[in-house]
Length: 196
Image (cartoon, rainbow, N blue to C red):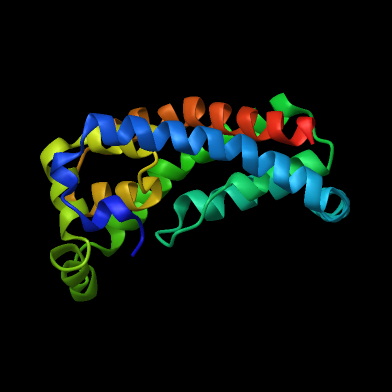
């Protein structure tokens, strides 16, 4: 239920399918930024200003950390939109969210590593999460890199990497790809926001 790819055969990801999914995602990001700016600009600016006045840039850090370490289906794009509403400079949003998202990978890894011996985790890894678990085991750090860069479940990929014992520093290095993805996604959202 977390991600459509997880429920199908993760070991056989089609390059064409992933390319199409990525292109659709990129177009939807611009549309999402535009729709939010057009429909909810006032409310988002009020929320963003209040949040930043209360937490400062840490609001972006906390929001991104929650979304990018959660094994639940959360996304950090709303955090960027709140940053736009607070009139935080684009590059500040990109850098803050990129650093935080990068660090979320090793945090997710350590979470997965710390709970891997619990019976409920083993049941999940051999049950509902088996396709993703097999994908990570088969592809190792490349699976984490794909999770970091492509529309795949990044947080869950890092948790599973920790649970199955992919190397910590490999996970840390693969997580650097979050800089690319975050910069691209936030920039595209900002284009839509500015056009509205």
